[in-house]
Image (cartoon, rainbow, N blue to C red; front, side, top):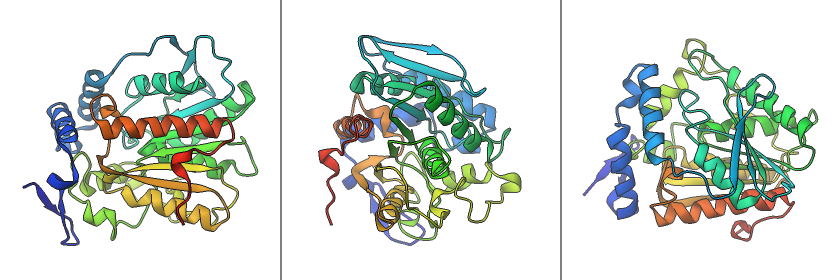
Length: 326
C-alpha cells in the first residue's frame, strides 16, 4: 500500500484515493519528470519539463490555427477557430512554478479550449524566475490583459493553472477600478498563498506530482533573497484584505495536492464579500492532471468542466456543475 504521512502525522492512502488510470499517468510523468527534478539546476529543470510536455502534447483539434505575436512586449500565442465569430477572449496563463513552462508547454490545452468554446484564446509567455523575480510575472500578465482588452473589445475571461492560476487571480484583483473589465476567472489547481502549516499543505505534503517541499522551493526562488513580501496580493492573492468587486470565479482543485485547500479558501472569501465563486475539488486527481485529460476519465471529465466554465463565463452565464451547495 502506498501510504504517505504529511507533517501533521495524518496518513494519506493514495492507493485508495487514486485510481489505476491516474497512477499510470503519474508513472509516465515521473519517467520523464522525476520527483527530484526541483533539485536540478534551473536550466536542467526547464529542459526536463519541456521534454515531458512534448511527450504529452496531443496536437490541435480540427479547425484550430495559431500565430505568435507579442502584446505589451510579451510574447503571446493567439488561437482561433475557423468559422467562429469569437464572441469572447480567453487570456491563458500557464503553470510551472513561475520557473518553467511557456508557449509550448500548454499549447494543446489552449488549442482545445479554443475548439471547445469558439473563443479567441491568447497565451502569454510571461518572464520566468529566478532570472526575473516578482513582480515581473504579475506585471507581464497584467500588461497583456490590458493589451488584450484594448485589442479585442468584448468579454475577457482569465484562466490559468497552478502558478498561472495565481497570476490570473492577482490580475483580476488588480484590475478592479483600473481595468481591464474581467468577465470571469477560471483557476485550475492554483497556489494562492494559503497557510502552509495546516490543511492540505500538511495532509498532502507528500502527494504524487507535487510535494510541499516542491512548493517551498518554487516559492523561494520567486522572490528577492527568498523573502516573501508581506501581505502582497500581487504575489499571494489570499493576502488581500478585500475580496469584493471580483468577477465570477470557478476553481478546480486536485484532491491529492498540497495546494488543494487554496481554491476553497479563495472561493469562501469571495462569496463572503458578496461575490460569486465556487471551488470543486476533483476526487483522486493530482497536480498537473491537465496532461491526463486524454487518458484518465476523471481528468477528462474535469477538463470538460473547465471548458464549460470558460464558455459560460464568456457568455455571462453560470455553469450547472457549479451550483452553490450551501
